[in-house]
Image (cartoon, rainbow, N blue to C red; front, side, top):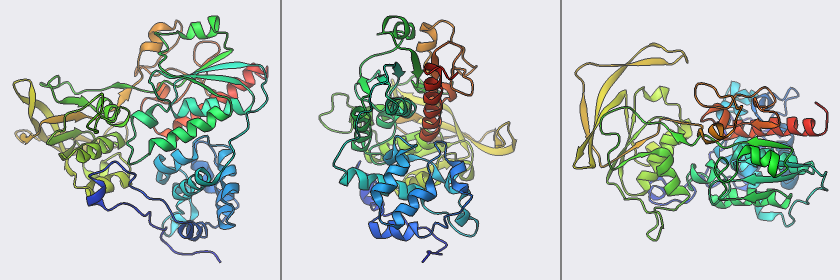
Length: 461
C-alpha cells in the first residue's frame, strides 16, 4: 500500500543542547522501518521528474523501489551506477533544490525524502557489504586527475571502471578535498569519506598525496614527462575572499577556509592537536552561506558565543534551510540586515566588530534585493574572533604555471560543454571552473569530463 502521508519521515538527530558541544554526526539516519515507510511515499512516476534535478542522473524511482522490496544492496548498486559517492551525497547534497524540488509528492505536501533514503542505502551497504569492488581489466591508457575533491574522485572513478590507469594527485596529506577540509565532522564523518576513497582505490585508482601540481609537478610534466594521455583539473576553489575594511589583518581574523581546515583536517579542537586554534569566547561569522553555517557551528562547539552577521534578511540567506535551522537550534544568534564596516582592536587582537544596519532596496543582477546602508546606524559587537565566510575563488597556481589555459574574470578555468579547457588534452570541472558551488554539481562536472576523456582517447571524438 502506498503511504499517502503529506509529510516525509523526520530525520532522527542529536539533541541540540548535546550536539553543540561535540563533533559527532548530528543527523542519525533513518531506521529500516522509517526507510520503508518513506519509500512507500514514492509514486513511481513514469515520467521520473525527480531525475531531471539530479546532476549525476541517479535512477531515483528504481532505487526507491528496491528499498520497498527490502533489497538494500540492489538499491545501492542502482545508485552507484551513476554516483561515485552515495554516502556523501545522501548527507550534504541540497536535495531540496534538486531532485526533491521536482518530486510529484511535493505539489500537495512534502516531497519524498530522497536524500535521506540515499543515505540509508549507502550506510546499509557500508555496514553489510563484505566484498570490495573488483578492479576492471586494464585498457592500457593512463589519465591524471589533479585534486581529490568530489569532481576529481568522480572523474577518477568513472574512468577506472572503464579500465583506465588513473592517478589522483592531492596537495594535502589526506584525499577528499573539500569533503575532508571544508565540511565538518558533525555533517560528514571523515570515516565516510575514507570509505568512498577506499572504494575507488579498490577499482585501481592510485592516490598520491602531498603533491602540489604547479610546484611539485606541472600539468605539462604530467603530459610530457609522466606520459598521461589526458589530465583532469579538479583542484577546487581554495582562495578565500576578505572584506576591504580597516582591521581585517588583525590577529583573530580568519578566513572560513583556514578556520574549517584547522578544525576539520587538523583536528584543532583536540587538546593534543599539532595545529591548535585558540578557543574564542565571542565570534562573529560574516556571511550567510553553508560555509558560514559550518564555521559558526564549529565555533559554537569550541565553546564560543556565536553571531552570524549577514547583510540581507533571514529569507535571503543562501544557506540550506536545514543548516540554518540546526544553527538556530544550537544557540547561534543571527544578526541580519547589517554589514561590517570596521574591525576594532586592542593591541593586535580583535576586540569588536563595527557594523552598519542595512535595508533591502531593488533587486540586483541575480534577482535578490540589494542591501543599502542606513546612514548613522553603526553599532558594535564585542568579539575576540571574526571569521570571513564570503566565498572562495580558484587558486591561480595552476593557471600561472600552465601556458595557454584560459580563465574567466573570476579566475575559473574556461571549459566547453565537455569540460575541455583551452589546452588540448586538459579538462577541468567543479569549483576550479565555477568557483564555490555544491558537491553534486562538481560530481556532475567530473562525470561529464570522464565521458569526454574516454571518447577522446578511444578516438570517438
